[in-house]
Length: 198
Image 1 (cartoon, helix red, strand yellow):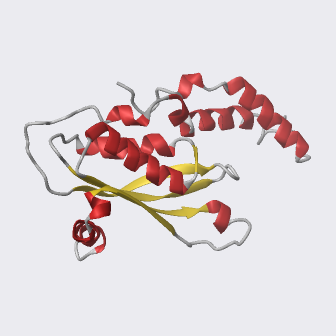
Image 2 (cartoon, helix red, strand yellow; image 1 turned 180 degrees about the vertical axis):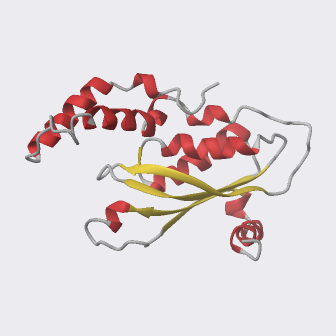
C-alpha cells in the first residue's frame, strides 16, 4: 500500500543541492557562509518531502472498502488542511479541501480522503488540477453515485509577489455523478459544507 513518504527516495537530492548552490551564487551570495552553507541540503530535503507525491499514485490510498454497510447518503470530510507548491513560481499555496461522496456500495475510511488530498497536493500543482484529480481518483476507485470536492486556498505567488494581495482566497470545485446532474443533491452537499454547521 502506498503511503505518504514513499516517493521521497526517488528524488535526486544531489542534483537539487547543486542547483540550489548555483542559484545562491547567481543571486550574488556566498554559498559557503555560515547561514547558507547547509541551505542546499535543507532545500533538497524539503523538496523531497513536499514533492513526494510525484512518485506514487495517490489514489492507491483509497483501498479500504466496506461494502456491506449499504450507506447511500452524503459522506463528507470538511476542512482538510493541505500545503502544495505552485508549479508556475515554486512558491507555496495552502488552504483546506472539503471532500464529499455518495456511496453506491463501497465506502472507504475517512482518513483515506485526507490522504488522497495530501497525495495530490505533494506535487508541483495548480489548484484547479488538484481539485479535479481528487474528484476523479475518488470516482475511479469507489465508483460512487456522486462526488464533490471544494478547495479553498491562499497562493503566496499572489500574496508576496505580482499583485501582492495577501489574504485573497481562491475557491475551486469539481462535481461528478449525481452531485453534478441533480441540483437538489448538490445543494444539500453545499448546505452541509457552507451552512449552519460551519
